[in-house]
Length: 80
Figure 1 (cartoon, helix red, strand yellow):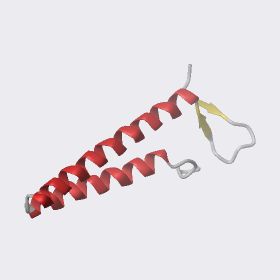
Figure 2 (tube, rainbow, N blue to C red):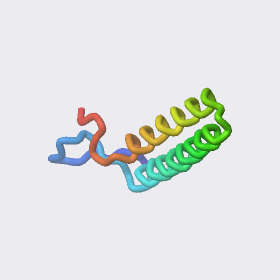
Figure 3 (cartoon, rainbow, N blue to C red):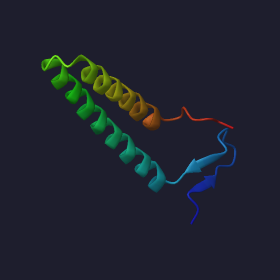
Figure 4 (tube, rainbow, N blue to C red):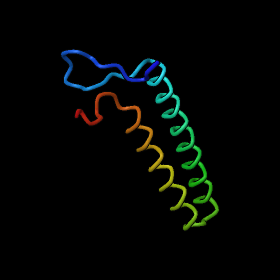
């Protein structure tokens, strides 16, 4: 069974099956959890006054948060 099915009359060339969409949502939630953990590590590093580690973990957390939002945002992919 193919993961992509053509949608007649749609501007989008393909429609993903519900299983693929669910898997993408799970990946987005995992990225969000990892981003939250990285931000927590950054806050702990700030409390220790370890500036370099704090900047690193906060940057990793923000990048993970941006990735989680980007991967789960509906309808913002390339339309052909």
